[in-house]
Image 1: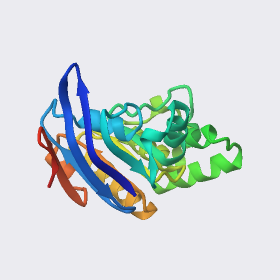
Image 2 (image 1 turned 120 degrees about the horizontal axis):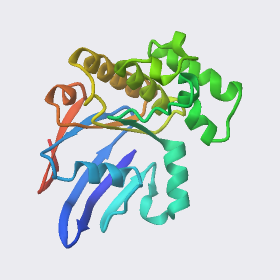
Image 3 (image 1 turned 60 degrees about the vertical axis):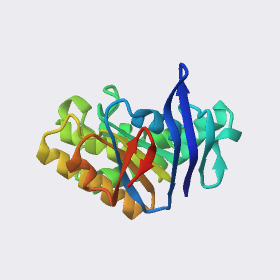
Image 4 (image 1 turned 90 degrees about the horizontal axis):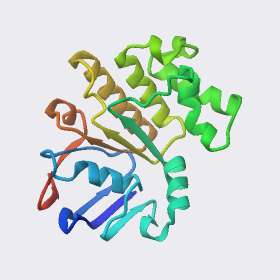
Length: 217
């Protein structure tokens, strides 16, 4: 379970996020929309443990972020979080299989312990025959499917997607979003999609609007 209670973040004396509250259970997939500058990226960074709130509570599986030092937050990201970015962030010097296996490597797994789950995820996203390919040989839609497989390979509790289809054409965007939502639900993970796109937001189970007054339906 993800628990956010009265979360507030200030920058240079200005309130960027003010008393944001949200509770999500495993299997829930939500979209967060809002105007530019309203704090969507700030909220995502707080949930990812990349930034710290000025007040309020943020906890994943009962673990309060405020009690964790930087090393503990790094471990939490490695073990329990998956990320899907607009720019893919697929590493060009690694094969497709190696890119997907990377989160498992960071958890100390190698050989078949990493390669087998990575291959299974690639098969699930329709790229089983591209495991030994290099990223430069893939299309944008294929790279985003690699990013989705990578975000799920270590069975994270929470998947964060930041404008994951901003660089894709409508047809590929629809395929990627459908795949992302299906995999989050099947894995029983919590999914949060941050987007400006109404079409992208509509693929989530529910849409939440972030405004200067907080987060609501």
